[in-house]
Image 1 (spheres, rainbow, N blue to C red):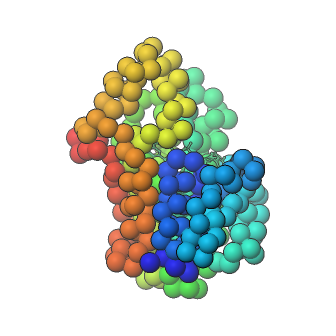
Image 2: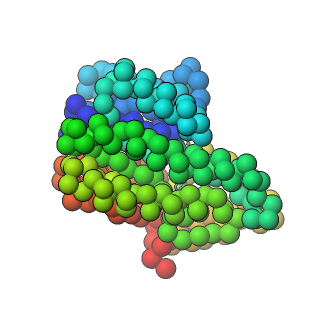
Length: 259
Ligand code: NAD
């Protein structure tokens, strides 16, 4: 049901972003995956073809760099046309107490996890408004709704992203454009794998103890969410039957924020 739609997914070469690219592509969209990696590094993972036999396209840019984001939009629009579906998925994490949190890391997390969504939405909303159809999906987190210690920049950025989702939705409520956030709990991806070591350090625990006592502790289902579950929600939000869902935060967190 997404035939003819063009989608851009930031951080689309790994984890949740890649699963979203693959799902939208399988539903007929023409998908462009962004990452700061080299094309050669990313392309083996982007082989999924759509009904026209096209693989997922790739657009290289560092989402921490405003000029690079702008240049990427120019290139994507010139190459593929106006974008109908924007998935602001890129996100990075750093685990440290506030008193030890490096200033540059704070700024970089806000740039990548929050400001990139603003810059991209600002650039792509006018094209969506011209077409009277658009979807923006912001991948937030359970940490957009509640906090955990040692994740100050991430929690702040994700709370901010929920606020930005609401404003975007309200400003475009009559333009055929919806904007929603998805708030996953712990999803087993390279991002989570990468923070295991830091979590071991700050909590003074072994790997398995971190998985059971820290990561899955707040998640009542006691299982990691899978990337396909998040991708399916994103696909649903792109459908015409989701046209009245806007400005909301949809949790996929195994009951985490129900407590
Ligand atoms: P991941 O680390 O598996 O993938 C991140 C992607 O972003 C990769 O494609 C990477 O190349 C790209 N990337 C990283 N920095 C970049 C930059 N500066 N510029 C461009 N691309 C960059 O991550 P993931 O776990 O799939 O997370 C995706 C999103 O989901 C993030 O916003 C994250 O905060 C959110 N999220 C993840 C979880 C989880 O448990 N994994 C839970 C809640 C929310």
